[in-house]
Structures are given as C-alpha cells and as structure tokens.
Image (cartoon, rainbow, N blue to C red; front, side, top):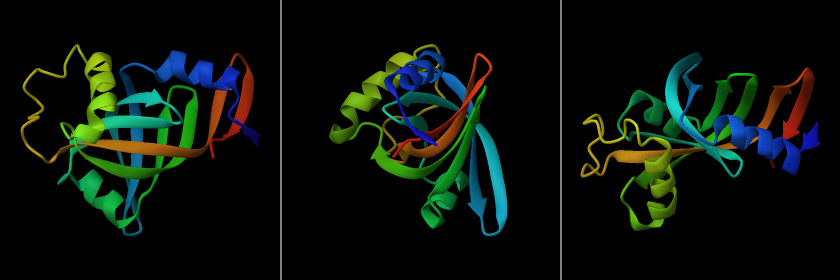
Length: 141
C-alpha cells in the first residue's frame, strides 16, 4: 500500500472533484446498507449534503465506518457529521459544494434553513484506484 501521492491526488480530483455519483455503504447492525449520493472529493475526503435524521446518518452515528465506491475507485473511510450546512464553521466547504452541485442544489430538494440539512464528510482511510491499467492501493492516513 502506498501513501497518497500528488499524482494520485490529481487523478482523484480530476475524476471526483466535481458533482460525482458515489455509492456509500453503512451498517445497520449486521446488515450493510448501500445508497447512491452526490459526492464531492477534496483533501482525502468525500463531502455529501444530506439530512441528519436520515437512516444513513443514524447508521453512521452508531458505526462511523463506511465504504464508498465510484467509477474505478473503492475505499473505506470514517463518516463525520459536520453539522448544519449553514453553520459558520462550514462556510468554506459549503461554498465549494454550492459550486460543485450548482446544477441542482437550489431545486427545492434541500431546505437550508432546516438545521438538520447537514454535511457528511467521509474521511478516507484506504482505497483502491484503477487508472490506465494500473491498480493503486492507497493509504490516505
């Protein structure tokens, strides 16, 4: 397993540093639960706008270990609820998410006045990236 290099970080940013559909797996007791979400990659993590009272966030509250999958990439990580989207501490990442998700973010699906509209940060720990016929096993920590 190799540490995340600038070359691999560049590949990840090119592929997922924009609105990207990713699968996120959580655990409910002994059962895995998987769903697709819009994710945005930056600085060794995926960011997702979600709802604090959703099953996904309840499951992460019980067990923060998650897995993600995207095109030619799979990884493990730790899910962290960063809290309300409009919280002052989230201003920088919220602006990046607004840019990345500009096509749909204000379509009425999200209620940013609801303090349960939150940002999920999935801090990656390890993963496998496939690029141009090469398999990279990455240590993100």
